[in-house]
Image 1 (cartoon, rainbow, N blue to C red):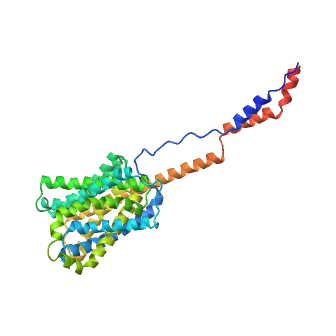
Image 2: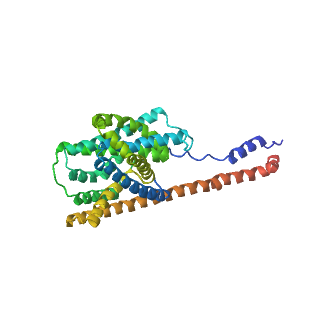
Image 3: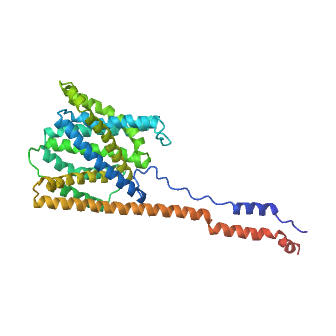
Length: 388
């Protein structure tokens, strides 16, 4: 008596063997706060940096002329003009459908959690920057500003948006030490003033954490980020203006100065908006720490410009400070560029591996398929053996 071949079982085994095995799930890195940059960010970072240095220089000259030379005063109000212009411009561009908003859109809860602290700490930075001159001399304030990149780096490492790197630390310390050597420190200095100044540094660092997270991790655009940041910043700037400069804005003659130098308000507002946009572009493409580093280098270059143009005297210590700061910044830029190239190559290799896996399925599954096909190709081979 012969037995019939088990065709149903063979069909089931063939179906199971030819079914592709799903790839293992990818690790979810959304919980990581670390910001990643690749080699593709280098050119935009360079262009935004040039734009920031250009626009910020023009804005500083315009604000100085408006505040001091024209006699308008009220530096907080003048400084906030750029933010108010950014708020109006970004709102028009977004609601006019000239700029699209990324999906998923930011919820009110997320906006309150990220953007409101950015606005709050922006106001703290501005308030401390004005209060500190009561306790510290101008030269001492300029010296303490050299610590901004280090404070920013420490804050980002602590929060998790950046990783500790010994090369970065050494480079930043060289920039700080060189910046301190460049300053001719004199005048008064108090413990309260130093605390206020470092409070301003930490507030600015925390502000850049929110900005970097939104720009890099959420991949928001520059105009889109201004659309979210500017309202929160303006809300906190208004109490500062009212408290510190409310009475001076109502003083006799202020309105006539504003009418006479209206074009300086236009320059301060529009170019201040461009400064904000380029600053966000630098943070988006290379990070907040590098952005703070170029501010230090800009200050040193301005001092060097005074030496060449106005014949300012420089000591040997200051000359060594210039060289040390530039060397530290150059080293930091080199290490950052190497890191970006590494991130880019690892990303490309990962994508290449995924494409190869899709084009060439695993050998084990294909061999099992071939074996199954061989077994099921001649289902009647077992019948003679069974009949015997």
